[in-house]
Length: 218
Ligand SMILES: [Zn+2]
Image (cartoon, rainbow, N blue to C red; front, side):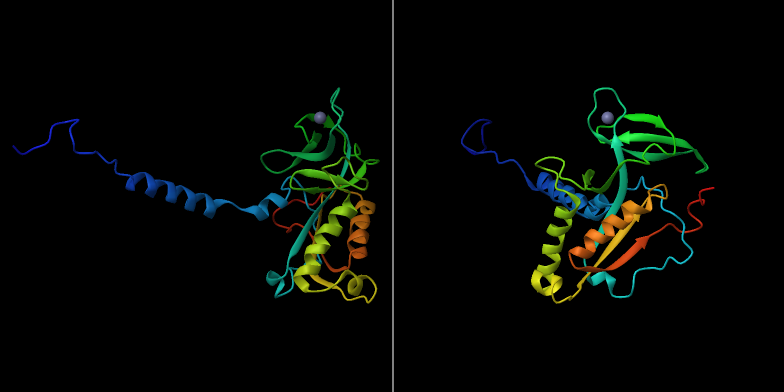
């Protein structure tokens, strides 16, 4: 007799092709849309408008671009919170400034004045963390320690030694892009540039906003 009985000898193999197709498509999709570079950029910054702003020099794409978001931070005013907070502009739908607020690392938002961070600590925000002049805890290095580790990578890429850079004055080829909010004090920007220079970086670009995108602060 021919023909098979359900549950008999014939083994049923599930067809995996559609599910594998879908998994590969999902992997491809996420690989295409993920953007690691964007994580370095804190888009909440309001960049100052500068007439002398220029695009990066030709060939800059081949070099590492170290983006430093300079911020001034104070202790979060939220009761019982020990995180650091930075000043954020509140804009209405027409991108007009309507006020300021302090936003902390843990997500607290408190109304504030434009001078709320005047005496705050100089910080650099890296991947959502604020690094200060002094080491904050075991996980968060100081600004100079962070720049030193970045300089190590730049040295490796440029096949230079630290001695050549620090003592012989050979500059690191990589470009340091400084981004700072227009409310950020100059001293903080200057400190970060000086620390980067100590590590051998000589090429700096100050990132500013285009005239047509952001209204100049009044
Ligand atoms: Zn807080």
